[in-house]
Picture 1 (cartoon, one colour):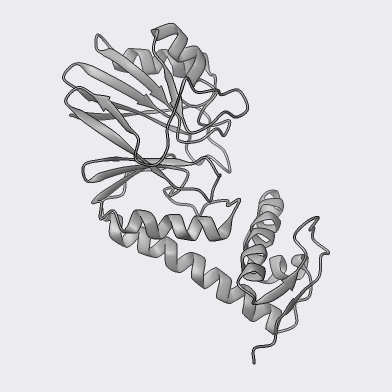
Picture 2 (cartoon, rainbow, N blue to C red):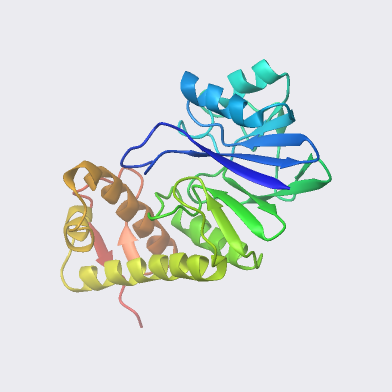
Length: 261
């Protein structure tokens, strides 16, 4: 079994050093996981790493533009199917994967683990003691969420897998998977407590909360921080801890604690 990483040349504030494309191989066969954006030099680097081996599939963990768009042109060039959970912008899988789906390569297989939260379609992939996490867990960064409740549930889900190491969609490999996942869970719970505390201390709008909780965030990431707060407030509303209208929420949307009896 081999696992090789080809770094896409798309560094940025959301992608870190770039997207990690993984080639997972066994017995002369290879699957390509998260081919990334359409960049000719990256496509050629992937093909160069494949070498004389037989590619059997191209897989995307989710449909974001830094992970999936190269899947179709790469798969067409190689004459293999594209695999993923569901269609998205510039991505339409030939074979749809769900929780527990297995992707064979050589004498082994990758097992799909549905991990919604970052996106509804997000899949991680388990290979023995390794977990390829896409954007569910990333090296050196917290994760932008679409659904905070689903994301926390998915963290508990991968914690229960008991894997040894994590291969993230961005950043370096992480060996102590249990400690990494525990850190991510505690970070999410701590952020909830922090938001509740600043509301209790007088914050009344999303903007107030961002100013207090995300004061360290540079200007270019403020919109991401606003999004994170809105998503977290939506969860806290569902949990019965705050009153907040998430439907058309923005920086000036009001929020208040629900008094506990």
